[in-house]
Length: 228
Image (cartoon, rainbow, N blue to C red):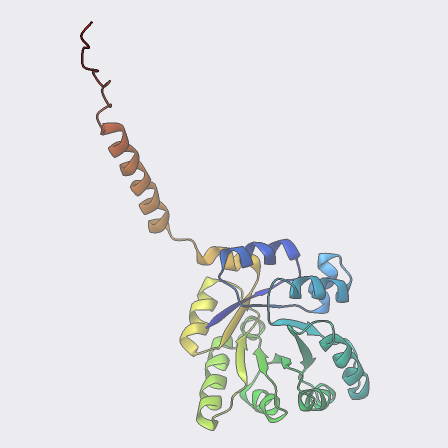
């Protein structure tokens, strides 16, 4: 399972890229606005350091989404165009996918919706696990069901577990067979943490320092006496 960052903050993305653990980024208009940047400029900037950058259309009608999607796709070769799972969004996504543009169908909440996304040739479908949990549904169960349905039907669309809220969600997404999990920077950082790792690293370093301190000091070399 590949790990994506769900953010538009360049500094967070650059740090995660430096760690070597992420393969992409998902953005949306809300994240771009929170980052305080122009949509196009920020997506272009992010796309220069990481592949698979999802950028979302903000139009509501099919024809407008098609025009906007083409424009977004032209920003950079790493861009994936996000469209909403609505009749207008899927219709626009069908046109864009037919033109060779990678499409991420967002705001998916059921297996049936995921089947519709696959029907238009979407590159990615994004079920929102956390938001399903918020209304007392099992979000990761839906992710697992989508994965199972896709495998049964030999569908190639990738399943991206979105609305990840905590490290357990990441584990559950992997066990469900999701192709991708996208998460906030804070959740990504938590994946590194375990008390035994911290304690073990501290002990190893302490032991190493003790071995260095126990080494005998080198003695001064005695030069042989010379005849005068």
